[in-house]
Image 1 (tube, one colour):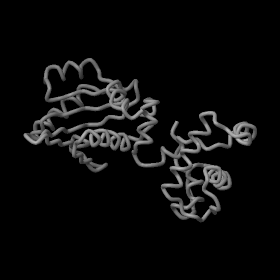
Image 2 (cartoon, one colour):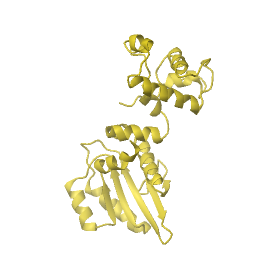
Image 3 (cartoon, rainbow, N blue to C red):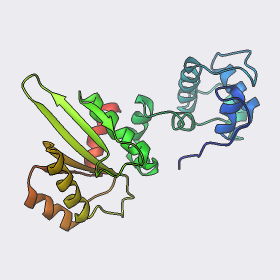
Image 4 (cartoon, rainbow, N blue to C red):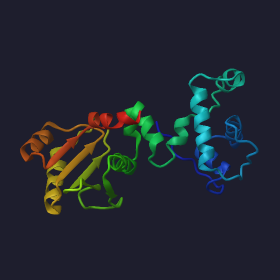
Length: 229
């Protein structure tokens, strides 16, 4: 499961603050940085992105089985190694996080709804779309607007993102609602994208409406994520 960020009283961006977020002793984090080749850090040193990248690379390599003697005999036995996933999941939606979900799509269920929307926006953006996310508190009937121009015409897509658990299927009301919004905004298509699946009534309603509304479920997301693995 996702590990919520720990509360910290240390200055943001410092080693001590990062250790608190990871729920790890700062001494352990400094030790891991040293093993990754970043030495002489103190709790008040500020962490750079290059530091995190080096640490992630070291942890990924070491936890695949390329351990030195001290890691295999001491740290692994006492479970004092920081998991790479802990670090990545605290970051914004990025290639590393998407790669993790490509290998383990069930991580989708653990994303907060807003992060799920950001993930979908990233997937559209990587396919050449100009993407605008609505405000988190919006009530406009859609979560993101994606636009692509092929040099001849522009295509506008409105997407409603539903980060639901697998057993919580998207119903027909959502389909009808997005269809109305798509018509009102004169968009080319409305897409409902969910980490779950759709009810029978929702699928039948989409078939009645036609291509103005598209349904994308967990299996579609798995296919979208495959290139990132």
